[in-house]
Structures are given as structure tokens and as C-alpha cells.
Length: 82
Image (cartoon, rainbow, N blue to C red; front, side):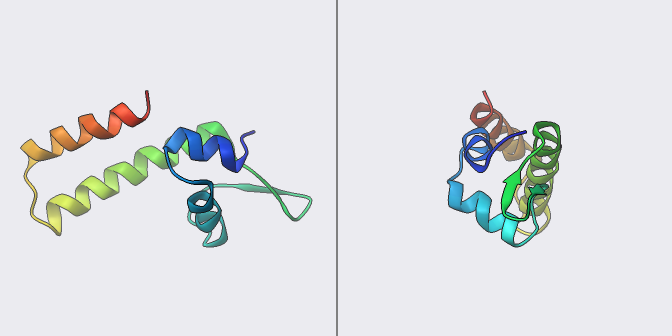
């Protein structure tokens, strides 16, 4: 099980970003003993994949970005997870 710090490192975001998503119940997490929060690495990887896909779909449908630029954005996003 991962801590908020592990998730933040994996996603290349701040720990406070992760904690805010937990408070809003927008990221998969498990509470242990009430206050302790842990994350299943497999659930986080699956959530991140869906999160990125929905973001790319938003860029295409709402902002009118093309598929060609989507491939460039996707390559940039994948570089964060290496």
C-alpha cells in the first residue's frame, strides 16, 4: 500500500493535491483506523489511466484540439510516468 507521498511522486503532483482529491473522494483510497489513508498501487495506476483519457477527451471535444496534437500530448504525459 502506498502513502500520499508515494502517490504524489508517481503522479508528479504535490502531496496536497493528492490529499485534496482524497477529501473530495475523487481518487481511490482506503482508510485505516479512521485517519490513516493508504492507496493500492494497482488502483492508482488504473485511475491515472482513466483520468488521463478523460482529460484528453475533454481537450478534443470541449477545446477543439485535433487528434494529431493529442498524440503529442499523450507522449508528453507518458514521459511523466517513466
